[in-house]
Structure formats: structure tokens, C-alpha cells
Image (spheres, rainbow, N blue to C red):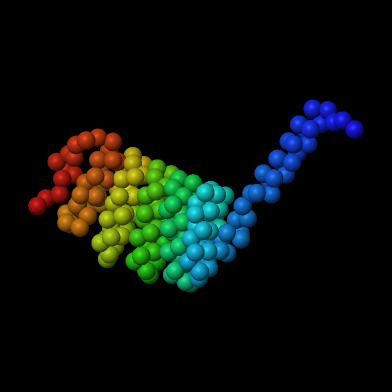
Length: 194
């Protein structure tokens, strides 16, 4: 029996369609692996979830509510790696950046919000509060995140001007003001007094 060329093409197309559906990652399984104590398993899951992107972000954001600080840290770091594809996690990251007991988790949440960029504009009030965090690195990353949000963080300029009076965050706060304004000059009212 001889098959027509079109029959072969149709069969090949159906096979490829089935393969592409079956090769879709199992997000729930990857999120379980992300929670593994085996660093190799968790690391592979982290990279796979970053590649999956937006469809995985809600499940990863749920880990920000874990009792385990290690899992909260891992979730924030994974969302950081996703960049703008993690935008659905902005509300959870905003809560984390101001309320988590662990400085390293607050720091990672600020970094994740910065990597999301302009789509994280709803987190501006939380990042403004984080500019007063007791941890210098959290304050520094909050300033950088506000700068990455850009013009959507216009309301943060007074707080950034105040934060620029602190040596630990001065350059990041000044740079953030420039990024928010989209200009190359700080006005005298924005310059911190010595």
C-alpha cells in the first residue's frame, strides 16, 4: 500500500502536535521540585520555571506565604529571574518587601520587583516604605526597583530624595530619580543637602 504525500504530512503534523502538547512542562511538579532540599533538583526546577514564565508565577507567588524562609527566598529569587513575566506576583512581592521577617527575603522581593520593571508600579508605596528598612541592602534594592519602574514611580521622588541623604543608598536613590524623570539632571530641590 502506498501512502499519499498528504497522508504522510498529515500524520507527521498530528505527531508533532501531540509531542508539543505532551512536552508542556508540569508546573505543579516543577513547583514541588523547587521546594526540594536537594539543591540540584531545586536548581533545575528554578531554571525550568523561569523558562515557563508567566503561567508559573501565581503558583510561585504562593510560596511567598510559606512558613519556611528558605522557600520564601527561593520563590522571590525565581520571580526575580522571570523579570516582567512575573508581573502577576507584584501584590505578593509588595507585601513581602515590607512585611517579611527575613532581610534576605525582603531583599530578594525588592530585586524581583525591580526586574519586573514598569509593570511593578502598583508596588511603589511598598517600595517607598522599604526605603526606610533597617537593612541597607533592602533600602538599596528598593531604590533600584523604583528606578526600574521609571515614570510610574513619580510619587516616590520625595522619599528617594530623603533616602539620598544616606550614604548607603545615595547613588542608587539619585540614579532612581533620574530614571523616573527620564532626564539627565537632578533639580536643586531633589539634591540632598550635605
